[in-house]
Image (cartoon, rainbow, N blue to C red; front, side, top):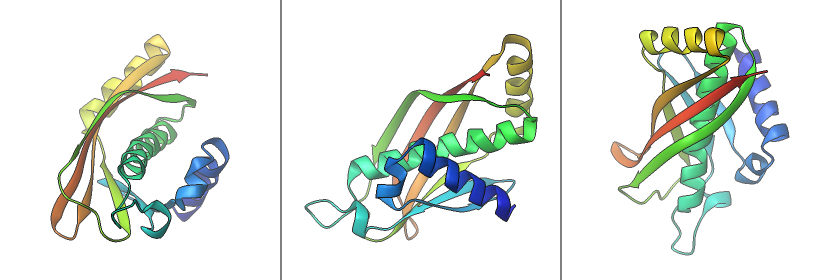
Length: 149
């Protein structure tokens, strides 16, 4: 698993260069969720809290990364793009932060894999969030589309 985390980290830095400026790191992945981390210092705004654009970007990238892992598990490669998303900013983030993207339900992955193999494209709806301690700071919903190569 550590190899996959490092592979994803290198891919993000290469294919989405702004991730280097955020100092984004791939923190963890398991059967329930994926975690991306970012330091406040490189993502701070004028008020000393995390910049909303950085929060949104980290959440979007967490979803993109979750889709990447699902594609790995389905043993296919494709182009991942975000089709639609929304963020709700509920609480300021005042320290280093992590985006948690939650793994889709097994039936969603089965349907996604079937669509990819049948139509050469598929989509996944994902949920993610950022917490400040025990408080929900930002909630995210995103729809990602994959086109097989």
